[in-house]
Length: 128
Image 1: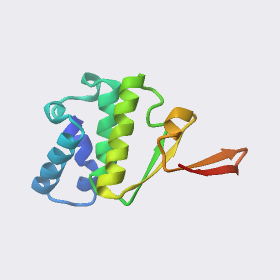
Image 2: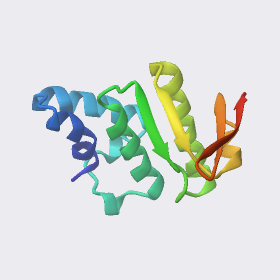
Image 3: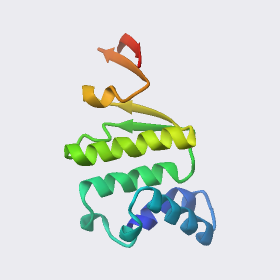
């Protein structure tokens, strides 16, 4: 699937009409800074662009909560910072709760709250 088809997928699965989901996907592409990449396939996109398409797919249906497991794990530091900035923007502008699992302590410090889990138990809770 192309980037725009990928972003539209949740709305297609929920039965939303083609014109409406396309319009929403264009808006999400703009939000992600990828409006010129909508007709590209995954192998034509960088890792950071692919990750932003995944975020776009996650937010198009305007969920109240997003679960992000190591969202920057396979990215270079600049692309990782860009992804985190998008998640922070989504959190603030849409009031979406982002639950982020990471081993990256610098990334964790960007959160409002940090829960340290060790061996399946909450070890420490911090509020930033």
